[in-house]
Image (cartoon, rainbow, N blue to C red; front, side, top):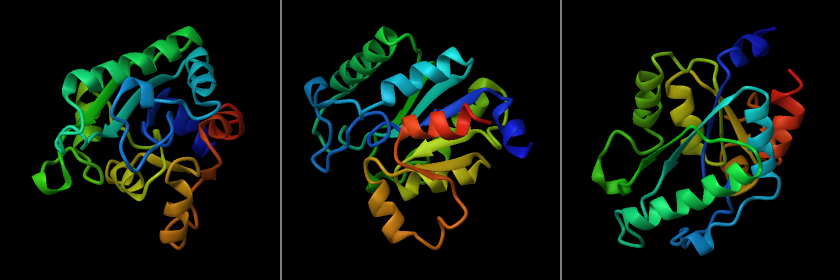
Length: 188
């Protein structure tokens, strides 16, 4: 019943790299490098068809590092939207932090600035809203606003599990976004 209550807001927050698309330690620097994780686009379409509003919150420090500009980032996001649209889904919004770790901003995860911005935009608290990520910073940012963090093993998820096993003891962990959707969100 508690999980059902958490899903009543019909909002899902997703990290991008490692959850929706394959991650790279060399950064995703062009639309050609943006490749979906198997099943992720299908998962987004399923959520949309079940009435969920989907938002992406992502760190994009490659902008601050000079690996790509904002125009390229928008092209990458356009490609992601195109894939999702063709599958019959919709991502309602993308919030991104273009800063580097040394910039001291409040929007870069693990800080909760982008989650707080989403709360303000939607005019509802994100407490209990599923926030799906593959890194410890995704988990920390979600927890800071009371969202329900869910870890996926795709992307950096396996590494996150090794480094934070004790903290993840009571947290939902799934192989990938499609498994979260099929075995947790749509089964509840």
